[in-house]
Amino acid sequence: LVMADTVDFGAKLVSFGSVEPTINTVDVVIENRGAAAFDITYASMADGTGPLHMMIEVPGFWGPEWTRIDNIWLWPTFTIRPGDKLVTRAIFFPSQEGEFKDEVVFQTSLGEQRLVLNGTAFEPASMRVA
Picture 1 (cartoon, rainbow, N blue to C red):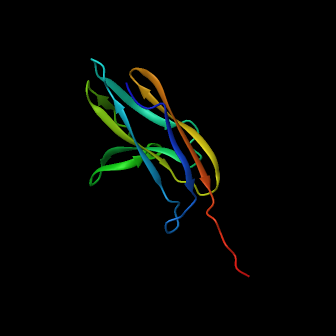
Picture 2 (tube, rainbow, N blue to C red):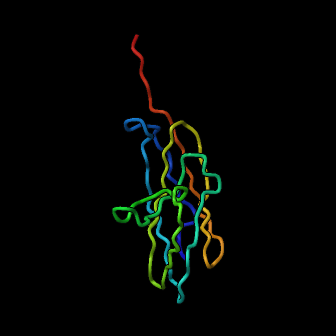
Picture 3 (cartoon, helix red, strand yellow):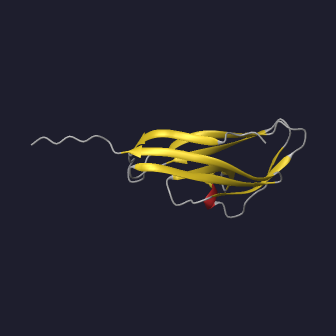
């Protein structure tokens, strides 16, 4: 099992689309460089209350769709064969300034694996003319 230990989003501006915070994404590749397959049977956020989360592509009603891991009701088993890769997506959507950290906890046939997510958010500059 090969993947990054940490995803650092760096400093991002607190900004909103229509009503939702702007989503920043980083693709995370989980790769099998070994000689035997392994399974990912479940994933969750260690905390899950902040603006850092993980998405994974799962079968949807109209075909594959990116879904936050905390919104997957029937968790599929992802079998990663030798030489195969699974692309997941870390997301950071701050609605207030601050420093944020959470971990993605993967349950696999190789044991528990963790991925640290970090991000810092800052408010945009504002100007007042009187």
